[in-house]
Amino acid sequence: VSMSFFDRLYCEGLVRENGTIVKCFDEYHDEILIADELRKVLLLDDSDHYDLFSHLDREEFLFCIFKHLCLGGAFCQYEDDLSPYLETTKFIYKDLVRFV
Image (tube, rainbow, N blue to C red; front, side, top):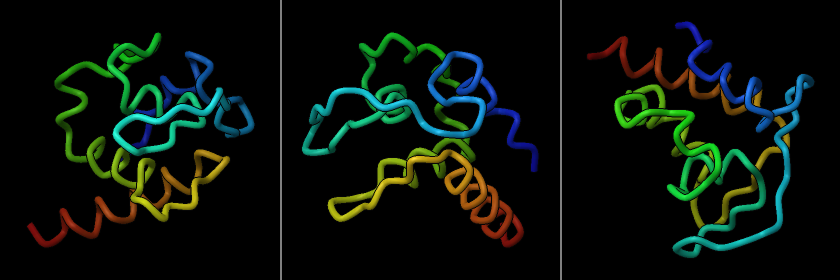
């Protein structure tokens, strides 16, 4: 499974070259804390970078897994680095697709 689908996050400056997710001022959207540019692009359609992923991209199974992992739930402890999200997304995707 190639994770190059998410390389655009680096190109647009949402994630630094070393994998650190760029922070932003805290805001809430439907009770979800948005504290970085990654969550903005995943959740806010008025984000400057929302169109980085098209409507079809956002319907991809790989993207949906990634989004759920990044946004988490009420007790989610967010990562500051992108790699744990990518590694876990890849693992879950491969595990689920294997049984389909």
